[in-house]
Amino acid sequence: MGIKRREFLGLTALGATGALLWQGRNLLRSRNSSPLAAPIPEIYRSEGGSLEINLEARYEDVILGGEPTRNMMTYNGQIPGPRLEVQPGDRLIIHFKNSLDQPTNLHFHGLHLSPEGNQDNVFLHIEPGETFHYELEIHPQQRAGTYWYHPHHHGFVAEQLFQGLAGLIVVRGDLDELPEIRAAQEEFFVLQDFNRDRPPQGMMDSHMNLMAGREGNLITVNGLFHPEIAVTKDLLRLRLLNASPSRFYRLQLYGQKLMQIAGDGGAFSQPLERDELLLTPGQRAEVLIKTQDLPKTPIHLLNLPYQRAQMGMMGQQYNNATVAIADFTPSAQTFAPVQIPAQLIPVESLPEPSRTRRFTLNHGMVPGQGMAFLINGEAYRDQPQTTVRLNDVEDWEIVNTGTMDHPFHVHVNGFQVVSRNGVPEENIAWADTVLVRVGETVKIRIAFRDFSGKTVYHCHILDHEDLGMMGQLEILPAS
Ligand code: C2O
Ligand code: CU
Ligand code: CU
Image (tube, rainbow, N blue to C red; front, top):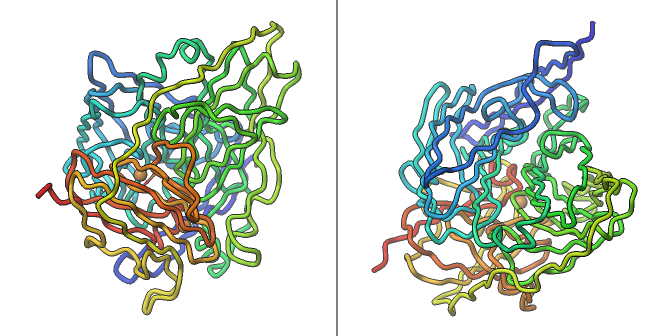
C-alpha cells in the first residue's frame, strides 16, 4: 500500500571482455516515508584561500522531481551535489569517501588542473568503502566561470550520472565584478534527466538505448520538476549546466531574447544575442535577461526538439517534444531598464599551431567486443593514443563520419573553436566541449599549458565514452 515499484536498470561493464551485463535494480517509491534529504544543494565557499570539505558518494532516498525516490546515487545525500565556490589560486581539499557498491572517482570538468596524483586524475580507482584525499590547486590564472564535478571511472560514468552524481564548481572572478552583473539576480540551473515509470526493457532494446545514449523521461532543474523562479531584480543572470549523460537541451525563453555572456570556459569578450541556446552534455552557458521586457505572467523556459541522429538511426527517437522545464514568475514590482555591458572580459587568441591532427568519430563492430564507439577506428584502451608536448599549440580537426552527433570534450586545457566545415568561427571563446554534428568537421585550437601527464579526450554522450569513444592523451614535459 502506498508503495509503487519500478524497475531501474543499472549497467555493469565487464572490463576485460567489454561485455555488458544487465542488472535489474528495484527502486521503491513510497509516500509518507521518513524524512527525506533536502532537494536544495548546499553551498560551500572558500575563505582565506582555501576550501576543505567532506564529500561522500552514497545511496540516499531523495525527493526528485517532487516525489520521494529511493536509493539514488548522491553526493552528501543531495541531487545535485553541493555547489563549491572558489577563486583563482585557492586550495580545494576534498575528503572523499566512496560508499557506493561500485568503483568511482572525481573529475573536475573544465578546470585547468594537473591530471596527476590527487588532482584531476581520472585513472584513479576508488573502490567501494575506500576514501581518497583530493587536494586541488586552483590555478592562479583559472578563468572565472561555471565548472562542475562528476564521476569518471571508465565503464561506470553514464550510469553514475544517470543516478544523480554531479555538482557545480563556480570560480568567482572578473566577470562577477562587472557592476551590472554583480547587481543581477543570479540563478543556477543544473539540468539532469532520470528514468521514471519506464517499462522494464529487454536486453536488446536496452543495448540500443545505450548506443543511442540513455535519456530519462523526467527532466529536473536542480532536482526539481518544473520549478517556478520568482524574478526579483532588473537583470537576471542564468548559469546553466547540462549534467545529463546524453540528453541535449535546446532552450528557449518563450518569446524572449537571451544575451549569452559566457560559455564553457568563462566570459565571452562581448555578449551574443540568441533566440535559443543549445547545450550538449557537459556544456555550460551564462545568459542575461532584462526583466523589464518580461510579461507580467509566468513565462516558460522551453526545451525544444533536437534530432541528434539521422532519421531511422539510434538516438533519433529522443527529444521530439517541446516541454516547459521551468517558469519565471515576475513579482508585482516594475523593473527598471538596464544596460548590458558591451564589452565583457577580453579573450586572447591563441598563436598559430605547430601541427594539425585529425580525430575521426564513428561507431562500428569490433571483433570480440560487438558494437563499439571509436576514435580513429579504435576503442579506448589504457595506453596513450595521442602524445603531445607541453607548451605546444595544436589544431585538432574533429571529423564526424557517423550517423549520430558527438560532443567532443578535452580534459585539463580549454580550447577555442577555429572553424566548422571550413567556415571560420566568429566568436573566439574558451570551450572544453564542442558539438560535432553528423558529417561535420570542427577545427579546434588547443595550447598545452602548465601540466604534463596523462589525461583523456572523449565524446560527452557518456554511454559513447563508456562504450569506447575516448582516447588517452599524454602531455610530455617540454623538451
Ligand atoms: Cu565531463 Cu571527461 O568529462
Ligand atoms: Cu571533463
Ligand atoms: Cu558520442
